[in-house]
Structures are given as C-alpha cells and as structure tokens.
Image (tube, rainbow, N blue to C red):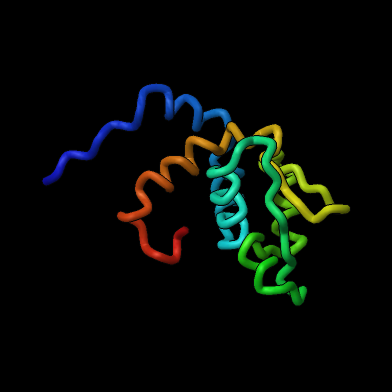
Length: 119
C-alpha cells in the first residue's frame, strides 16, 4: 500500500479555525467552489467579476468572470469567505478567506487525483 504524504506542518491547525460544517457547506456547490478556487489564485485585493447565471453577458465578460447565483454568493459572504460588492458585481477574498484557504490549497494541490467534477 502506498504511503500518503503528511500535510505540511501547521496546515491541520489552520484548517481547525473554520468549523468543518461551514467549510464543507461552502464547497458543497460547484458555483461556490469555482468562486473560491478562482479567488485562491488571485491577490487578496484583486477583484473577480461576477456574471449571474441568468444574465446574458458577452463572451469576453463570461471568459473573465465567474458565473454564480445570488444565493451562492450570499452564503459565501455570510461565512466571510468573500466580500461581495453588489454595485460593481465583483467579489474579493473576504475577512475569513484565510480560514478556508488551507482546504482550498489542499484541493488545488491534489486536483489531478480528484474527479473532474470536484473542481
């Protein structure tokens, strides 16, 4: 049996800062995972344009943006994982993003081993 690598030192402690139910709930829907994973690769203050699932944006807008429903953005904002500017329809990393960052990084680092539908 192949031995698994141990998580980096301190990662488990960082994961313990966010209740597991909140972390898994935040990742429970593909739109929420997409928002969080795209924010993971951005600077903490860099905004991410949002196109709502029921809108008819241009192809260029859709390429640069993430598609989401109000309910999913509201849930992520409620947990503090994103800051959502409803006027500009942009999101940035929220005040609690660092709490879920280790879990997102764990998923990103192991993306090749996960089913395609997970990320």
